[in-house]
Length: 381
Image (cartoon, rainbow, N blue to C red; front, side):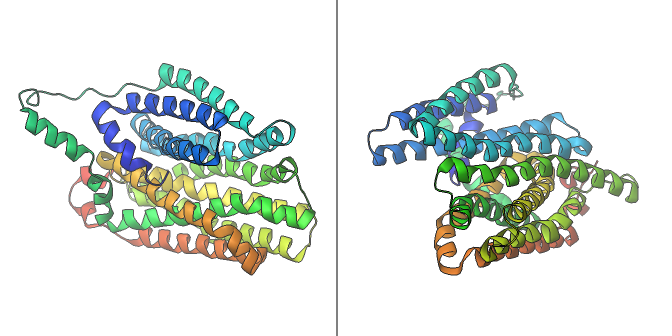
């Protein structure tokens, strides 16, 4: 998923956003069937690596469509609702998978996913808007060598990474990566931590605990989007009609610096010290989930509006950072839990959340030189 934008971004440039989206859904459908029928673990992993490359396509396409449709002063709410539907799967999928694995077979999970992919294809075919047609005048007379060079250039990762020359975009991507480290730190630790604390042995039982952070994900995503839009409107008034994209980030400071770290600490240390029964860890998990997605709402919307002409590149690069950090969280989580204990493991994620907040403070304070160049570069409304 981390390298996915480097594969699908050039494909999107070549055939268009809608065609790329539909192709990715078809590939996910086929990989789900292949995973359900895989005869060996090697075949299963190979198929699912291919299927995993499609995940970011839907997120990047969804955010760019929203940025094209909605005005900046309501984009936060739209992105919040979009990501709320996305993160609700973080709550529903493990619970559904736990039930299927307990009472049927793990292969049924991928059969269900194939059916959902088919429904998604039908909905996407009906509702994902077509791309704006660009004029091809002047390109039809190019020679075959020129067209070939253009095709090769499309598959260069340089356009995606080129936007990192802007310090504010680089810092916001790092902040998103740290928040993703938090997200997958919570999700990958729940089964181990809850099973150890409450002696739950079945996937079904331990997956039930994900209802707490999952509910926080959904509510936080929606509330965070509304707050980010409100913050933008307040600062438009303060700046006498000028809108700066970085003003939106102020809406997530409290959640990044206080609520998310606090939720992590309550969750980790209540499990470590075995206090508060099930209620206290669940409350900590809810607070962490709420704080996480409320923080993400402002950052995700900021990525789409900081440089509107490069929003697809910026969003793609953002997800490279996010899933690279996520992979690190998943790979290191169980060794960290085993070596340090649940409390200290969640203390690390709490520190990561606080650091992301400090980075966002830096982005808010930083005034890029392009703000003084032109209104189009500044994205000022």
